[in-house]
Length: 432
Ligand SMILES: Nc1nc2c(ncn2[C@@H]2O[C@H](COP(=O)(O)OP(=O)(O)OP(=O)(O)O)[C@@H](O)[C@H]2O)c(=O)[nH]1
Ligand SMILES: [Mg+2]
Image 1 (cartoon, protein in one colour):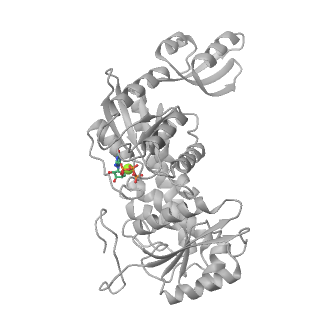
Image 2 (tube, protein in one colour; image 1 turned 180 degrees about the horizontal axis):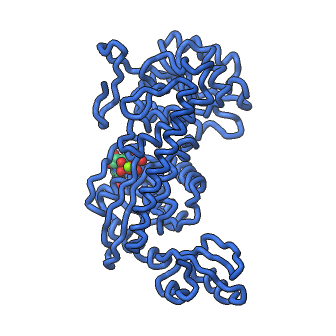
Image 3 (cartoon, protein in one colour; image 1 turned 180 degrees about the vertical axis):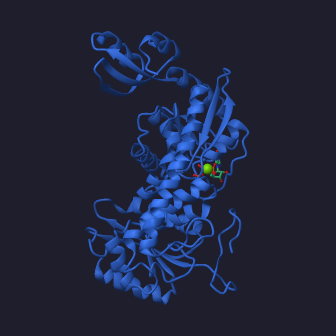
């Protein structure tokens, strides 16, 4: 039994009578080298994540250590204190902000009477609750199983003691499979099904490429305002919510830029620091939208004091999915409530455009910049340049964005983005 997507998810007990909200105890660990400030912000974010997952963060604590312990992450004494406190506070789940290795998770779990999970498990749990399309559910389930498999004990039955909290949910209304052998079977089934989904997506994308419309992908930290911007640009009706990871499926909408260029805008899943790599892998086909885009709009919440860290986290995921080479335009959003100096600094630092996706301020100017950027590199081409035409290769490097180069018998195979006039100039060397 659950509430709708907007509200907090309520989990019914086995008897289906009593509604239980997990009481969570959040622990962050700062090392002297990394400093406490970023650990504090990350811990505050974990609080929001925990709430989004439907649990109640009743107690939050930042521990400091010279270095992290391989066995327990924290010191034995610190762990024992936390065990006592969790009993006193009647805690259902202890959530570590730092990632726990499977061994650390098991060791800690054996000390506590309640469940012990980490930030990644919370993110996975939110994804499980928000998945709604078939592809989204398959992707999330695959990520969940791959995350939990090395964390199972024995045959795996003892995944979690409490029914229906972080770490037990599958996507939608399903419960997570907890038998090792069945998990392995399920993982191969999911991979097969996802291959089929990816093939369909590939066909759709090819049709789009044939239609030659440039694709602009909105990327950014979760809650930065990507969906709001998509709605503002294209009059779409994409779900916007003040919560983390509202959007899991990509949606593509068409709009005309001020100069009349028809363009496809694609909204997709938001990123976060320490995004579980199982999720990034499972979402590969969704994220192909980003990888294959002609331009990335990197939407930044200019009103968040943590904007710089968020930008770094997003860029690191972009690198992980092989999208680092796609041209990127920074959009500093929420200027209606941000500190003007902070916005100015971000704009100058990233050569960005300041907007408010909710009021629409700056959005027209943004579309003009997008149009200019697109015409600078609108055509993605594969060329084969003969070895005796070093002059052409040099021209390409000067005037286009070279994505990849390899060598064949006939010459240099180059994948690049070019302006329309340059693409025409290179027509003779185009590879179909
Ligand atoms: N004040 C203000 N709020 C905004 C602006 N843009 C978006 N928001 C709010 O920020 C919250 C998140 O917006 P979304 O558009 O859902 O963000 P998102 O990047 O799509 O988030 P995810 O899909 O969860 O990754 C919502 O409450 C929006 O109303 C803006 O320009 N100004
Ligand atoms: Mg969204």
